[in-house]
Every structure is written in C-alpha cells, then in structure tokens.
Length: 283
Image 1 (cartoon, rainbow, N blue to C red):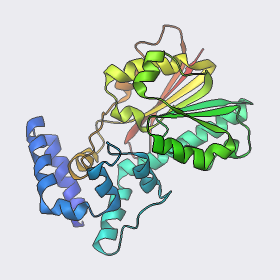
Image 2 (image 1 turned 90 degrees about the vertical axis):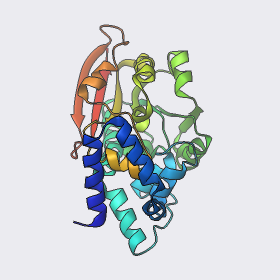
Image 3 (image 1 turned 180 degrees about the vertical axis):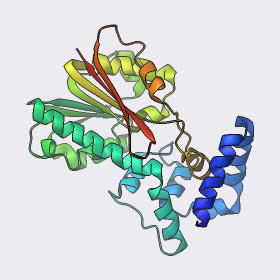
C-alpha cells in the first residue's frame, strides 16, 4: 500500500468518525500542512485549490479527468505518481462513466426518435458529445447547451458549433425563474450540476427541467452518493466539497413536479458505486 493510498484511507476514517466541527478543523490543518504544497503541484489538485473560475470541478478540471483538451503535463517522478493516483480514484472513474452513459443515452435516443432535440444544463465543455455518432452524422433536430461560464460556452462553440450545437448563457436561478428552457426538447442531460445544488435550488430546477420536456421526453440526472469513499480525499486534499444524494434523495427532487407528469422513473449506480443516476420519462 503506497503513501497516497494510506493518506486516502486515513482521511476517510477521520471523516467517518469525527464530528462535523472536528472534520472542518482537520481539513484546515491539511490545507495548511507543507504536504499540501507538494500535492498542489499536480495540475488537477492545484486547480481545485486555486479555483480560477470560482469553484472546483470546472470544465477545465473535467477535461483533465477525461484526459482531453489542453491538459497540463503532470511532470515526472512523484508528480506523475500524484496525478496518476488523483485521476484514478473511484470518483473520477465514475465521472468518466457518466460521460459515456450520457453519450450512450444520446445516441440510443436518437436512433429511436428521428430529429431528437437535446439540451444540456450545466454543460461545461459538453464532452459527452465528443464521440456521439448522432451528433457527428447530423441525426439530431437540435442541441442546446446551457452554462453560466462564458469560457465554457466559447469552447463548446469552437469544438461543436460546426455540428449545429447552440450555446446559451443561463444561470440556474434564471432557469428556475423562467420556469422552462427557451424551447421544449426530447432529452435533457444534467451531469455534475446537481453535485453543487442544495435541495432549495435543485427541487425547483428539476420542476423547470421536467416542464421543458416534450411528451415522452427524458431527463437524466447524476449525483454523487453520500457513501462515496473518496469524499474525504476530495474535501481535504482538493478542497472540493459537494452535495451528496442517494436514491431516496433523488426521488425527492421530483416533489414539485405535477402529479401524473412522470411516466417512468429509473435509478441505477455506476460500477464503482459512486454516483446514482436518475432517468425520468414524462407523459
């Protein structure tokens, strides 16, 4: 067992048994420890600490996890080991699984529904369409990408605008206030967005997204679960706290959706048991 694995396990044990106040103190101590300076030399961990776009987990960090985009070199020796460990944890394997799950849903839905219309909310760099056959072959009736980050929207325009993807600058609060997206669609993806939203925001957002679906449309949401064994490492080493939900919590997101609107509800987890996925099909 290497030192990073031991650190990971030790932090997990501390978070499990300490009070919330004690865990907060330990996180502060980890952040101030000289070891943190070494850890932050890794491009992924360093960006999480610095938060150049105001939060950890921005679209550039997602590209690092995917191994895409302009990814800084992690260096050699210890730094390479740090980076390899960071991108290989179960939480980030599940992020890559999520990207593939969304792409698969997109292509399968397009095969069943000619002229499928799609929206991604909290789109980031929209990497779930990178290998999409439906997008590449022009089978979609439209793809709208919503995000509040102008840099992310610019990257979507650069990478996928030629395939007809349209970008919209929208904050979550604006979607909630409007009550619906600018146009109704057949499929909506919301990947890492819900990991940052409390129920106070997530519940009305879910209502607005369901209202944006055409009959027989589908909403697909993913959220990290409270039992994820990497939470302590994310919080203490990367300063990356998230909102966690299990299946019961995911179902509760539908509490403001009108009765009778939901035709089918499916829940599943990724192979690493890190995320729960909720797929809602409407009438």
